[in-house]
Image 1 (cartoon, rainbow, N blue to C red):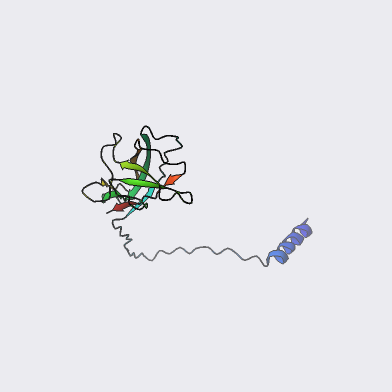
Image 2: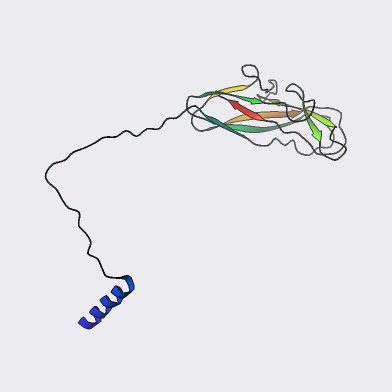
Length: 174
């Protein structure tokens, strides 16, 4: 039996090298000394913004208004005041008060469909990009805050079939 244990110990030593004794932490009783140090982090006002697409779906004739809703999400440091603005979009001739989507098919990119973006579910307050006039104000909480965005394609003369689109930029001012 002793030979078998010695043989096992030899096999371990050959495989892993010599076994080193575990060092014990020393205990001292001569006294103590201490030091303190500061741990710091400086947070400055900051915000980020994201937006989800607004899709009015598929329709045949624009005889009645099409209403849809989406949202933008703002994350600002706690107590940071902010304003969220939406520009007119990328279609030539589009303004905040008269937004346009343009056709995407070759030869139809000059054809437009009017639409509007609103701050309220009643679709009465246009959402623009001029701080203090037509932006949405808030105060950061340190977490994402979802802000509803209401869209409408009003009744209008229906242009030729195509996919109509624009890209609107949402900006958070802080």
